[in-house]
Every structure is written in structure tokens, then in C-alpha cells.
Image (cartoon, rainbow, N blue to C red; front, side):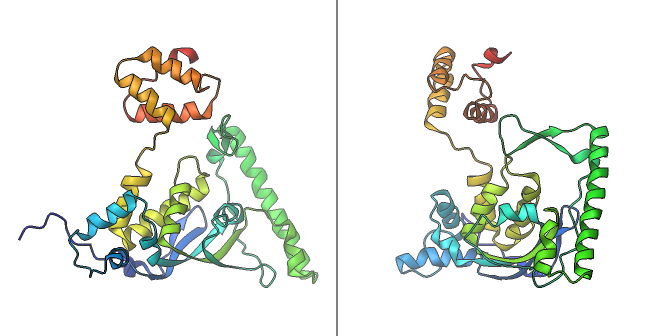
Length: 302
């Protein structure tokens, strides 16, 4: 008999246990252990109805429904433990996600990793003029070459100072204090799938810092895609590759679809958008472009 919805695909995660996925110049992510998969999510959702896994709704359709409507607890039935090697400045952002269990390499007990994250001459980014925490564009190659040279000299000096302190018998907990934030650290990071997807939704976003975005994309596309393929596809469809519209945006889009350009401009003015470098307006403009709609107030900034 023809089935409208295919059964859950077999998870491929067992094939990548222990495999290092390289990130940045010297970092990596690898799976240590996991529990559950797409089937565990489906079972957890259906137990609410006292049914077995052979319910009326096909497996993939149920998971997509859960994702679409943000029914999050079934996704908490899956857990994963990762081993990560990451620069300390990037790790500071990572550990802000407090829903994970973490054990990190300690420079109080052991010598700090020798690895440090380097910046190529063509990879020095400019400060974004609107987003205070973001970057936008690149510096010229000549400036970048000088900055990379200075970075290399600084990193060598910091490591030499650290090594000299250790050799002199300084306590490790004190000798480490001047190590740069580019020093790599390692940790075991265990979390459930719901909180992992929240981490990925924030850290895969274009506004996230490039370095942590590289880790998030690696975890998503190399690991979660193989671990819970149906959930991953639903996550892309409903979280990553979707658009959320605010009330002001809906009002403006409604005016534009009715051919009322002046009304859309008036609404934008009422919302306080028509000021220089207004971040909310810039976000709305990206959504209008994505939907193939005209930016009605464009003439104000020509």
C-alpha cells in the first residue's frame, strides 16, 4: 500500500563517533556519546496519548508538527556529548548557554594548550557601524598584513612569558593569567537536543560572531544532520530558513501588497524607522528583499 509519509530514516551518527570535524585553524568538534534519535522524539510525543509508535500520524509529519508549533519537551529526550576544542574568546560566548553540562580543561591543573587562533591577513574584519557587537566587511590587505605580523609577535611573546613562569616554579593558576584569549581550550559539552537547537538557532544566525558561527554550522550540518535527520530538516524549514514577522512588518507588507506605497512609508515613519541606521528598519528591509517586495522608503536614503 502506498504511504503518504516515509518512515524515519536510519540515523548515521554511529558512523562519526570520535571523528574530528575541523573548525577554524586548530579547533575541532567530535561526538563522544549520544542518547535517542528521531524515533525517541516521536515516542515521547505519542506517550502523551497512551499510544504506541504506530500512531495515525506518520513519524516525519509528527516531528515537523512538533517543531512548527514549538512543542519542545519531546526533543529533550535526546542528548549528546561533544568534545570541542575552541578559542577562549569563542568559548566565553558558548558557555553563556547555561543549559549544558560542562567539564573543561583546567590550566590550574595542567599546562595550557599551545594552540592559539591566528588571523590571516585577509581576514581582519571591520566594526559594524550599526550592530555594536558585530562586524561588517574587511580591512585592506596591507593593514591586515601588519596586524597579522603584530599578532604573531604578541602570541610568541605571551607564550614565552608563560613558559618562563612555569619553569621558574610559579603556580599554574597564576602563571596563566596573561595568556591571550586566542588560546585554545578543550571541554566536554553535554546537552539535550532542544537546547542544542536553541544554541544553533542563535549561533548560526548571520549576526553571530563568525568564529562561533563556524562551530555551530559544523555541529548542525555534520552532526545533528546525521543524528536526527528529520528533526534537522524541520529545524531548517521552520527556524533557520524561515522569516518571523513583527506587527509593524505585517502592517507594512499588507500595505505594499495592496499597492499603497505612501501608506507603507507613513507607517514606517510612525514606527520611528525613518532615522539613520535604524536597526529595526534594516532588519525589515532584509525581509522585504527576501519576499521580493520593494523597499518603499528607499528614496529617503539615496
